[in-house]
Image (tube, rainbow, N blue to C red):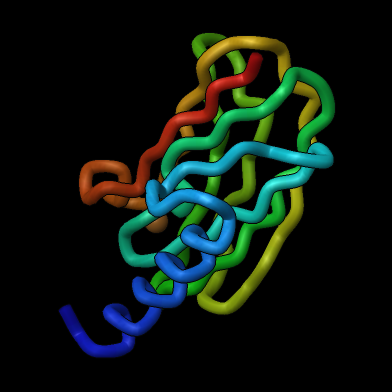
Length: 121
Ligand SMILES: [Cu+2]
């Protein structure tokens, strides 16, 4: 692993530990969640939220263009496409209870690990 990525991983681990857990998971509070994209990772990878309006604040920390989609069978409530390195975007969706997939739809990024899970209760 190149040094900059190792350093970034340490920072992420420290932030998560500060939130009460070392697992790469997050519970949405206040209807807002920060998501970080990297080559090739969506962080947090496992998100839990209450149903209703949720705002995703997404930043690309990688060196490649990434995207962030939230999908469920038959719907795609969040669709942030072609986010350039260093760029951020925000998307708000009114989510019904269920299980959603988080995915980067660029090239083969999903196969390389850019997926995650969102559970809405
Ligand atoms: Cu990607």
